[in-house]
Length: 202
Image (cartoon, rainbow, N blue to C red; front, side, top):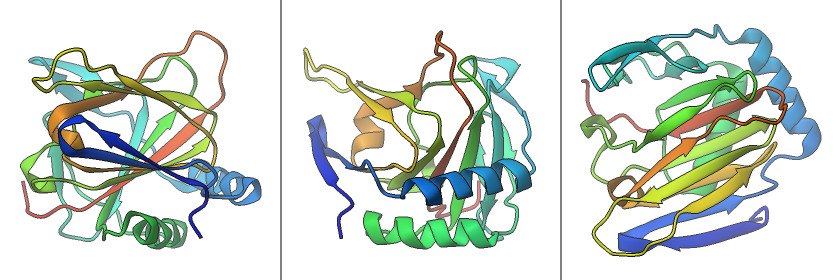
């Protein structure tokens, strides 16, 4: 079963796999309610361009004991896997055709919460990371912007809805940056899970 898979090729060797209805509505709602209630959400400070600020969303990091991860000056020591996260990981691994040992959870409480443009290109993620991104709850706009040397390459925007799965692989993290902008219109909470593999300690 491919769950309505759409494959998108990106310039310079990147690739996206998009499963718009990866989870049925009832499953997505159940996972959203469970994670919203049970995850120990935190708002952590990060360093951006030398400045220390609070992340504009809530986060949590789960994974294998050795899956310690550093980004934006923030050291993340994993919490132990829970049953729902292990099940989502198993299913994401099947579709992504990759194995994961960690997951970053982001809670966007409303349209004021966001994710700035960035690439998941830290050395601990390996040379060509595979990132599997699960969305639960409100639909939010996901933007990709090309950073390579070719001229006139248009960005890609996707609306990631409840129960969808987006896999980024190939050289996507080398030549593209991605983010979730603020939204002016009212929007409910959204949980995003990005499964990944940590290859080495920071």
